Image (tube, rainbow, N blue to C red; front, side, top):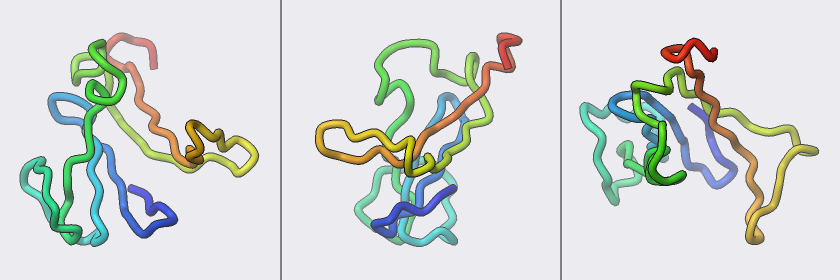
Length: 97
């Protein structure tokens, strides 16, 4: 879990796929993945399949998702937006680490 400069907290988790959620309250509890307008609850942002398209992004291929912040020198700008964060997963089930 990490906090963006705009005050949103983000987390990535693995269920049937790698899911990304956000909230302004990191102590909020969630029992299922939902999209909500309540910024005090965890809200579904997307999954790796949503973001990257169809492919091998399900629980059968990836696990252990972790969000991280890039060093300032490594931040890229895409379409005028700075990409300060990354998501890392491993391929343990495929023996690729």
